[in-house]
Length: 520
Ligand SMILES: C[S@@+](CC[C@H](N)C(=O)[O-])C[C@H]1O[C@@H](n2cnc3c(N)ncnc32)[C@H](O)[C@@H]1O
Image (cartoon, rainbow, N blue to C red):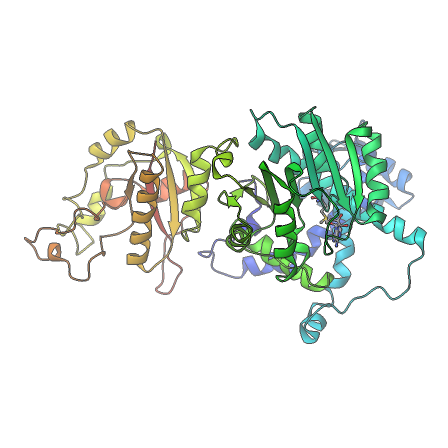
């Protein structure tokens, strides 16, 4: 998943560096905001520039600019070649005004939210938002603000719809689409471009729709789109059971726990019997830090917006008599829930069983559930030495030499091409029970070869007969070998999966367990 390290804090990181990075996080944001505002990347795009040329174009002295460009280089946005600075690919793709995937409006909208965040302590004292617009807005000011907001939403939605569309691959979507709280219409637009026999009804407040229509007309959608100005908190004047696809993208987090069930129910009522409802939003089960901070942002900057768990949203949809998929994570910071009146319809989505299984296993409470090719699992011949010389459980229960030998593990891995690496934490019994549940879930989902290696000696039973020197395990149904006892170098395997497992030096340091669930 393409998330930055800040969103994946490793609880084993000790020392104050993480805190220093949190405290200086705004330095990174401010450098980005200023560069976008000054349109530095747009200036550099065609053939790069020297500091003197940029200074001339921006009418600024070169001394500070040189240092600013060095900093932009250090955070990966420009590169220097001799005297000239050039955009990196990232900056060229997303920070050059006028390009289709430009993110500058969204970035500057985030800059605007900063004022509210500076009042966080005041909001906490007041129990809610304290920063309200002081002056009455005239119609022109309002239109300008709406354009800025909708452009910001548009930057993000254009890239998100590209992640959503593949789930509809192979489906012959036609008929009517309803996009509730459409903003720029970019999500609906992505569907219209991909499915020529689809028409769209876009719902938002009138002031937004004026601009949406302008944007959609520019894209040439013309008569394929109709616009229904609506306050979605009031009854909707759209056809009941009239839509093949209903979209709620980034709407759930805009309202309260009393309002969202009403909105979901109205959306459910708009579905034709064979239709799909798509919920796209931020969820704590997917990107917990981002979702929690967005929740705080809604507390500071809106009246009653908040983040809801995927589980809660699925429960609300069930009350509206819809079947749902698991929470399906995107490769970025948001996730999807698909819903339908007929459970069989959900099977038509291009959702492979592996993705759904990972979502279900993640929901069991594992920190990470990472697919890993079995060829990356590192089996070594030294691991049982650590058991034989250094552990008082050697020879007991399912520990070496009673566990599969490294050669047996190598042979077994040949029978599989991929596995899931499951991350959890103590207590050991809870972790091992959860690993067994995950293995059972995989087996019942049709992965008939599912087999788990967990972490540490087996601690399933309150009284373990196997712990007596010549005792025999009475629970071979549930006991499993540990990864390390079966010859797997856990540190190396975890590193190859893109994670980092630290050696513990002191009591009280955060313990992370890993298990390997062979699938296929
Ligand atoms: C965060 S934006 C999401 C826009 C779009 N769905 C997307 O994913 O880019 C929320 C949208 O919901 C609209 N909205 C919020 N409250 C609304 C209401 N009560 N009635 C109609 N539209 C509303 C806003 O005007 C805005 O366009």
